[in-house]
Image 1: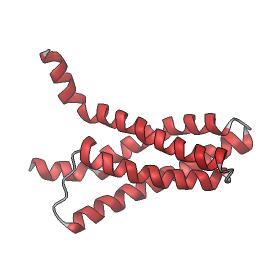
Image 2 (image 1 turned 30 degrees about the vertical axis):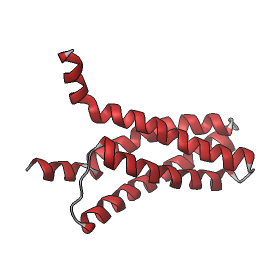
Image 3 (image 1 turned 45 degrees about the horizontal axis):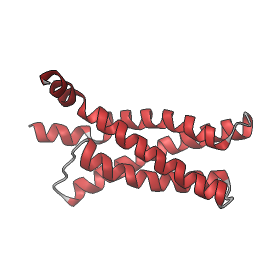
Image 4 (image 1 turned 180 degrees about the horizontal axis):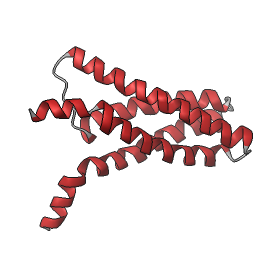
Length: 143
């Protein structure tokens, strides 16, 4: 039992990120599917809207439950939020590129392309969050 607790404490942020990453992915794919498949919107428009909704969801869950980020000033909050969205915009361009490659070039299924795309994006976004976005806040709390 002690070993499980040690593992949980050691990998809590990774496990939480994976859980919320899966939920964020489901939000992204769900919004994309509703807009693209059922509403027949252009896949690029559906991708951007799905991205925006899922980034809002991801920011809230990452801040509260993954990295337990506590911002004490509105400036710190805006800096963190801006940084989060900046790096998510970087991953949006990756997302759009992978969607274009999968659908327009390789003629793969849009939904299958979106699923594969999201696996890559979840990993990239974790690295951005861990290394660039929430790192400074954790460092400040330790001092």
